[in-house]
Image 1 (spheres, rainbow over the protein chains, first blue to last red):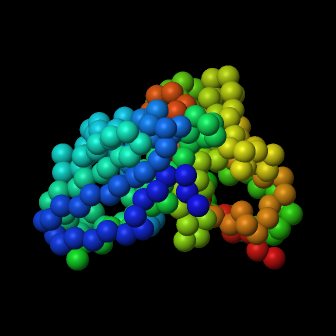
Image 2: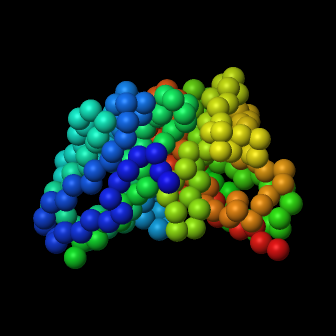
Length: 110
Length: 119
């Protein structure tokens, strides 16, 4: 069981918007930056959001991140078929002294 | 900037294995390098990290004592090693670069090394 809680799956139509939640505690999300990653089979995972809401260069502004208390959210607008795949949130846990991930959310663009 | 991982490996239980992660395009020793496991059909797990400049290493308690993380600055390569593999070690292993300090995000990922342990 993952330390951070994500919904197992989300889906939306092309062009629509979707949000993916990531819930934790004061020892992880509540006290450390959150990052988000996109995994596609056979490819290197990609950093989408770091430090809660910052986008690396090359990541379109269709992707956004936010955080409130012990929960974080990834938002994706203008969905494209290429956005399908698995999304993971991550942060550091001060109590466990380890990096922690959410269980992953599979996005389907129907 | 790229992390190039070694090819897929197949081993028997009890055998040893060392997989590698070679950087290109940045100053290797000044960034923390970590390893992340993904078991078949499962999520990501943080295993541990190393700071190549001084070999400072941190392990997840879940992996401490079962794997060893090392780095060779002369060849700009990090390693993940097992002395005695178990079938449950079957997984894809990603090496990652930390963007800043050891609590920070992973801004560069390798493509992963598939390790299969089967008798």
